[in-house]
Length: 609
Image (cartoon, rainbow, N blue to C red; front, side, top):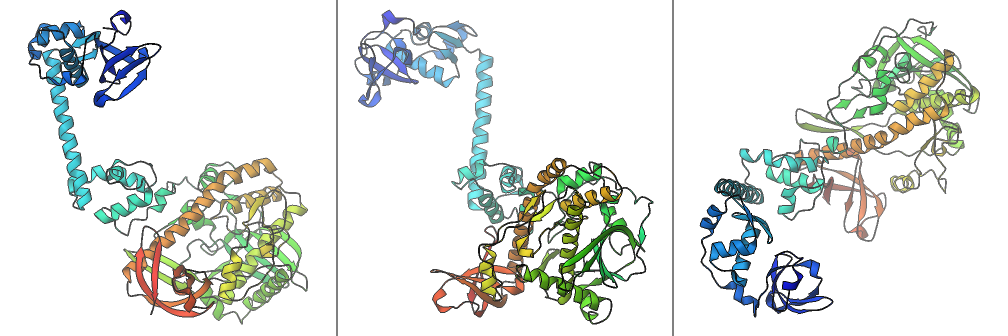
């Protein structure tokens, strides 16, 4: 009964085509066959298998019920191999088109026999019983799955369903891209669809921040051991009043400021003193690239011991890499000195420093920062100011606290930029391979002062780029700049410190290619970390609004389109949209209240009140 039995293939023969019975109508270069429903088609001989030479007049003949003794036939041929014709004779007493087709259906079913029409394997009783058990088990599993899917559809899952929902969590966490549950419910195979379903089922609540794992991060990190600061010669600057000024609650003070006559000193934690290139701690830092500041937890780039040893003002004296800068009368940097130092630091909050801004030495530091700021302004620096808030999660309660704009914040920011420019100048002057942060100028230089103007102008600014050669950072108004004031929490800054320190110690420097390779390996992580911080802050702001559904506050119209107006809500630093833009004008301040919150979509809708 094989395909090779060409002589038996004739008109009105019964054949199989794709497991279905077909009647041979004619034989030529191709074979014309008829399928059920009178459908005709031409096929190649190798596409069919003859199961009976015929003649067959109508395929409907095959539907005739034929009684057989299948069990007895299987007992007689147990575990043997035979042919379709022989099995039909034994099981049905004759070999006809109908019995031939019945045997084919038994082959397809697979309980009694398996194989092909010319090689039929007859199953033993033990085989058949095993198949029945397996089919029963599969049937039970299908029934259990169907019942589970129905419970999911009804939103009435039980404790016994928890393990079955792991694949749904996997797709919500971004570990996989396909989930059978979503397919059964005809939902999109997306992380957001899975997140929404988990919330609907009550498996997750608003306290689950999926973006940490979805972006490949973890809140639980194992750190290598940190070394100790080496005993080495340092410039003693402990006689200078030095201040580490940060937001209240800051736990990693990595910079401080002081002044000595006309020289401004920016002291930065000397992380490179204990984290050398390619050390275990350096490799760990490179693999994390940055400290994560999330509302629920801070995940440091370096072991906690690094901050305890090196943080400005956390010990009686702190080891630092100090940048000494003098300015010309117009605020331009005149000279730069960089030394390994020892400093005695007092920690202040921005508010505390603001209260003492009229007194020395903060008064002189503030004056220097203003001069430097005005010089940068003359060089095209862009000054945009947007509301800032601190979002925290403590014991399941979310708080969103506005951060006040203060002169001391501008002062510290300007002095850190001064240190960054000083580091870049020092590297250029001494031909040190260095990571320069650059930014091309926007097509039109503006300095908007209105909220809507700054909102619009921000879109024109081009992203900064790290290069191995100095170039302008247009929006800062600096000709050569490097990030160099946060080595405790940014790997890019640590590389800059490692290069400067190697130069000061007369040790081998990383060459340009080695340096850029290190930067490149952490660049993608930095982008992902920034995305994570942005999405996490949005997530917890949405939770804050869910916890405060009667929230009301002021919004500022920053953009008007045909169908909506973009609104900035300073109190929670949130951008949103309102309909009916024809009733609004740019920079108009309006009272709004929460209307609805889409936690999965990270959007909140407001209404005017």
